[in-house]
Length: 296
Ligand code: PAF
Image (cartoon, rainbow, N blue to C red):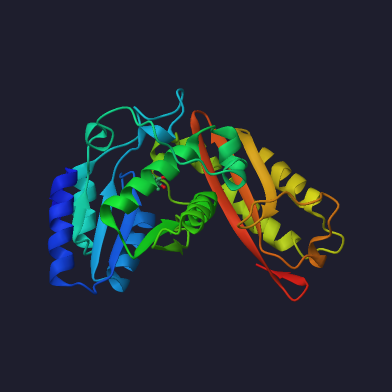
C-alpha cells in the first residue's frame, strides 16, 4: 500500500495507475479516520469491486461547527494504515489541513432542502462542509465508485443529490451499517462514551427495532411512530434527544403526522440523533414500502 500526504504525489500515482490500467475502476473510500469495522466493510467492498482502491483519511474542519469536536476528534493514522493495508487498500491519502485548504476557501458547495433537515438543522453548515470536501476528493481522485456508510443516511442522500445535480461521473455506493454485538452502530465517536453511556446507547438500535415491529400495527400513523420512538429513547436516563423523525427517503420530506403508515407506498426513514453527555450519536432505519403495505 502506498501512503501519500500531498496532492501532487496523489496525482502522480493516480496518473501512473490510469496509464497502466486505463479501464481499471478506481474506488474511493472517504473517511475521517480512526477506522472501525464499518469502514473496513467499505474498504473491503471497494477492494472486491474495483481495480484500485483509494482510502482518504482527513478530519475536515469545514464540516465541524465552532463548538463541535474537531480538535478532540480521535486520530490514529498508524493504526488506520495497518487496517487499510490488511483490507487490501492500494493507496492511503492522508493530507494535512494546510494541504487541502492552503488558503481560506472562497468556494463552497451548498446543497438545499435535503441538507437542511435532521443533522443539517442541528449542525448548520455541516453538509456544505461535507459537500465541499467530497467534491474536492472526487476531483482529486476521479473515482468510478465512492463508498459511504448508511449510518449517515442523510449524508448519502445529500451526496447523491449533489452528484446528480452536478453530473459528477461517480457511482455512489451506499453500504449497510455495521453494528456492535448489542446493536450499537459503529462510529469513531463511540470511544467518547463512558461505560454508563455506552451501556445506555444501545437504546438507539432498540428503538429502531421496536419501531419496525410497531410499523404494521393497525392505525399506526407517522406522528405516533415518531412519538413512540422518542418515548422509547427517553427510557434511557442519560439520553437527550436531538431528533427522532420519520421522513421520506431519500428526499427527506416531512410526513403528515396523521398519515396512516400502512397506506403509504414510499421509502421512509426513521432517523435518530441522541446525545449522551458530550457525545452525539446518530442511527436510522429505512422502511421500504411494498404494494401498499410496509416492509422493513
Ligand atoms: O462520513 C465521513 O466520515 C465524512 O463526512 C466524509 C464523507 C469523509 C467527509 O469528510
